[in-house]
Length: 529
Image (cartoon, rainbow, N blue to C red; front, side):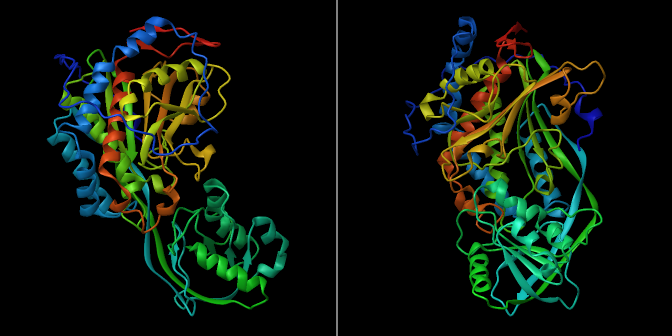
């Protein structure tokens, strides 16, 4: 986790106030048409009459700055920069598995880039992260394309030869009782949602082992497959035998299930090499663009820099890293210095349990065509964000999605996610994408500043707000944690639009004269700062 003492050190105040650039268009802004339609499930329907007019006027007063940001990415020197930086990063470092030298080299690169680009403060904070290494994974006598799951143990040197049982649910597994002992359990769970399917990836080995299984193979968590396995993290349980576990393709899971239900005896010989090493030292990377008036208050844009090793992690989550980095870089290059500090955090070891992001609420949904923001907030906060999104009408990213029921403004936080045209995705998972921002204001009575989500949920000493990108990611899980997560998933123009949206929201959130820290029933008390 983050080292709090380093994280709370006061930011050096910047004496020079840079002039606000009101116009820097090189050509008229292009109006974008929506890329996908029919999103009706979760769009916000808000009554914003309670928001004072002077608040709305202040937000609308940032239109010139928003136009400058959009023009910078669509027509100016920022056009194509996010994609170019991402491409170089992915091609140079490839997969960035937790605990590896490659991940640390990638972190060094981003920290160096922050210095080269002239940010006000660039530093890192140590994080102890899991170090699991995939060795060789191959099945014999079966044409099964597999990927071992994170933290899986290896098979014995001679491999495992056992008959298979194929089930579609944990209930079906339990109904087999002692018949599972000595077998390889194959899970062919139907894909209803990512959360539902990933439960089998996460807990499948432990639950099979409780009934005496010697290994487990889990259908990949995806709604579409072209023969690629999708890896991910899995969890062993205390006092339960650790058995090897790997993911298999959707096609192979279905084939094995058909053979099994037809009465065929299925024998699998499985050999896997993997090793769990002691935790390794890694780092979260922090890059600051210091605020002009309230440098200790933060708007954070973030992504996770590690990835799985099946692909190169362009979508998950190098895209989020470079959108967040270039959002802050754009403000610096344009000369828009907000009242609060814009902090870019590139956190580590997300794929092994959000290790580096434990103190920074993290989410996970890709960098596809942007539509707006998803939030979980009281109606007044949502109304304010809706006004901010109106500033990005030129790139058609004005949609607001409520991620959970918001009946009052009594929350100490709001969470959000990337809003995207993902009708083939999971509506209840809008709070899971890899790039997010939050506004933090320290109200602590001690010398510690808490960022941990569960602390905030039970304390009135600290307040932060988060929101995340909402984008057209209906194909996200086609590539997720697989060899398909490559640069070919990304699009330069789309990344420009996301960067423009991200920079605009971060800038306005950082520049507002009022604080959203005072919640009183259904009405916010706005405190000028």
